[in-house]
Amino acid sequence: MNDLAHLDESRDPLAIAEGWLQDGKEVAIATVVETWGSAPRPAGSHLVIDAAGNFHGSVSGGCVEGAVVAEAADVIETGKPRMLEFGVADETAWQVGLSCGGRIKVYVERLG
Amino acid sequence: MSSGWVERMNPISLKKLNEERRARRAAILVTDLGDGSDRIVCEGEAVAGGLGEAAAKAFRSGSSGSVEADGRTFFLNVHLPQPRLVVIGAVHISQALAPMARVAGYPLEIIDPRTAFATKDRFPDVTLHPEWPVDVLAARPLDGYTALAALTHDPKIDDFALKAALDAGCFYVGALGSRKTHAKRVERLLAMGATADEIARIHAPIGIEIGAASPPEIAVAVLAQVIQAFRSRGAAAAAARGEAA
Image: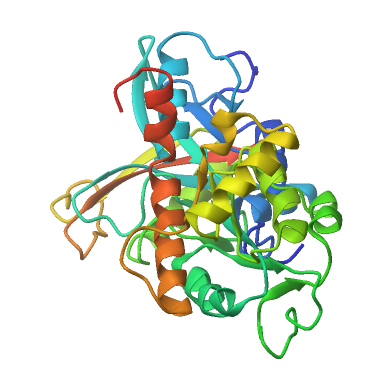
């Protein structure tokens, strides 16, 4: 059923991740697990990434997705999850930051 | 946790979560941020300890977040079904309600067996069922994340849907009509087997009090009441259990 009250299978990151896995792809799932200040996407938001670097969803307004996709490649390879933290004042740990002034924590894990 | 998968997301958990979401049932993906293991908790499932309390709270609020429970840190990702609105009656109020509800994030569909009312011409871009509620609701059952507004004034059309909405635990049930009309409706619903407590859940006269007079104004009052019911869903349930909201 293709109405708004049901899952939009073509855009839903978790539905896409399930499909990718069925197609034999290696997949990582990134999840916003904590936010402080004005974060663009709430806790629970997902970015799903395959081994080729294709991705769907978002964990920010586009500011840190590139960095998360790069980390996801390592997570897929090693199978070890990572907790990433992004924020404006967080220059030592990460080069990218959020222009909105907020801070977010993103958990990246391999699916399967 | 017991799933046996650590550090990675268990594919079975993802499959189960998506199944629940497709079936319009609320579920939480619980991830232990210490060892990376995960599990799915379905609404109504008994979960022991601090995690159980946190899960119950998350189902009420709909907010995802990290919690400390039982000496561990968990991330609870709550997935509630998209709320939707079923309207009985392809009437003037429904014509105004349909675009407003869509904008507000409450996809709407209309059921009315009177084919002169339920026309594409009167309702462009709206899911229309020009059939009896008994037939439509058998194929598309109501649930706890659905609101039902009965707007035909016609007991032959409205009554079955109202009883079905009470039985399904719809988060909102409203019925158009004066207090006098509603008093007669109460008698009919009692005769159909609804209890007085169930019937008391029906918002009638329908809509929050804003002095609405025209059909579009009544539509605003109805939509506001639906939103209020959805956003206070948790508080009402907590109050019923005697907890602080």
